Image 1: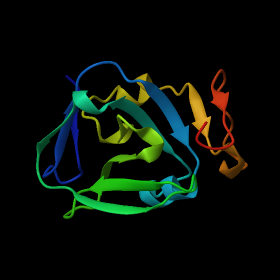
Image 2: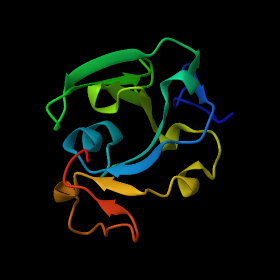
Image 3: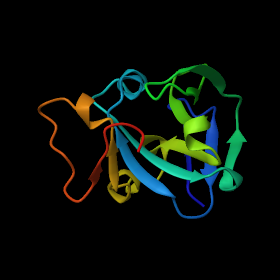
Image 4: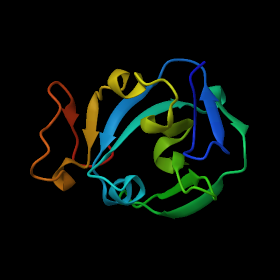
Length: 136
């Protein structure tokens, strides 16, 4: 059962089952919450997702897709651990960098890149990954 947590360790998550999707997201929200050019995400079934400890804070907003999306983050250190919303019904979108396994990012090779028109010019596309204009 993969586990992960925020930077300070107060919020912990885990999941069971195989990821339903592995994606890079170049949307403007993901730039903001990651502090980088894109976010690396794994989508897991909601019923296999577990909040192990802590009380993450939610913040909701209208995403680039036009749907409401909620980010769940540690109120102490600010790390975003996962997102959910109408665009991903039945799924939790885990930020792969919060997983404890040092190989988690290597194993999260994306099958799709989302919002590719927002990809910065010096970042190349991932060979073999579907290139999506938006959420699909």
